[in-house]
Length: 336
Image (cartoon, rainbow, N blue to C red; front, side, top):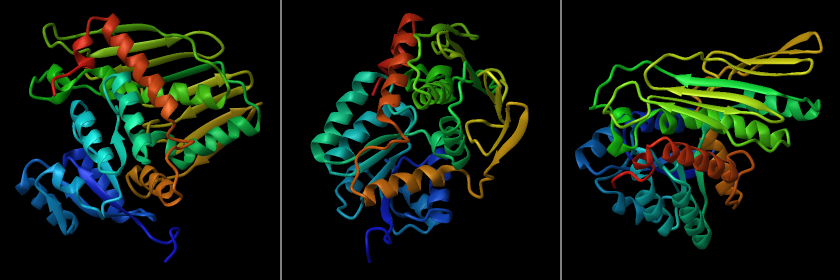
């Protein structure tokens, strides 16, 4: 069997809700990856998860899975303050690593782990699934092929939550808050579009606030960009924000409809003519990043033109500086 026919054997580290969604996609909708092993700090949790997905390898520690020579790629799905020690563990054991967003809470950790990945000849990428969706990739091709000029981008991601200190998004020790939890999506979106359009983004004006005094996390954040492409990127963990994203420019008006961060239906009005990009998703959307990452491993590559490491670095740098400048430095260096 050739490398293009076989499937990459995945291990899952951390077995919460997002791991459940990732594993569902991996087992039901992927062409190039398969579930091989999973791990958690709690052996009973690992056994329950393994039983649900029919996985024969269930490890009650991350170290055990890291030492399994059959595991080729690992998806890190824990809360983000724990990403770095797990990335270090798996990269040091020569595993390719896809780490859930935000990859880390500061730029230095990203650069350190990228250096470790390079040293060991393996791949480390951030799991920003939005940019791997077929509709979004077709939109970028449309912009490039037609030499479209965009001068404004608006995107927000916000869901209403009542304050609950037990929720990780309100927990400063777990690097909660709007910027790191959902702001990462909009910043990735803005910077990625600037990259494909050949525009250097400006430094944003940032407004970060906290609705609940004493919670020590940011509940709302807004990043405003000026320059060749202006942008308004908003995030909230306490209010529902618009779920469509809009790109405008001379003779062009583009709307990515409901849940723009899972782009499937895009409306375009260009020079007076209307068209659509329609790629309805059969799975939950995680399958696109899984297959892309798996294909890169099969091809012996350690970087992606889509899940850009440069964009990850830029986004982390922007979030870290914004949080520090706004008095939330503790979220960028959480307890581990």
